[in-house]
Length: 146
Image (tube, rainbow, N blue to C red; front, top):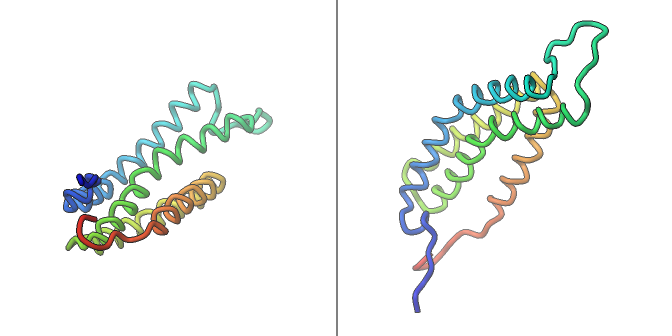
């Protein structure tokens, strides 16, 4: 019988390599989220610094902005943690260091969003927590062929 393997199982060193690439992309995601915020706000006609007495963005506009910056800013650190945990489970050499670095970056990103824009930080933290719980609950692959 032919056994089906995932890419990370056939080349486990690629998983830890991609985790380090995602760690390197964290600053790009943070800067990119600012660009997405400014561009999307401009397209929606939202004034990000409204003067006194002017209208604030609607709930739908606010949620769209929060969702967009969360996706862009938290994609790289979340992927880094997921890949680093998978690499660590596969027994890669630099995986424990990648896991620690990726986790610290993820927590710092969520804290920054929580301090700067409380809604964005809390929404992002909830989504990231769901992704990480799903990843960490997966059973470890044991035995030959896994």
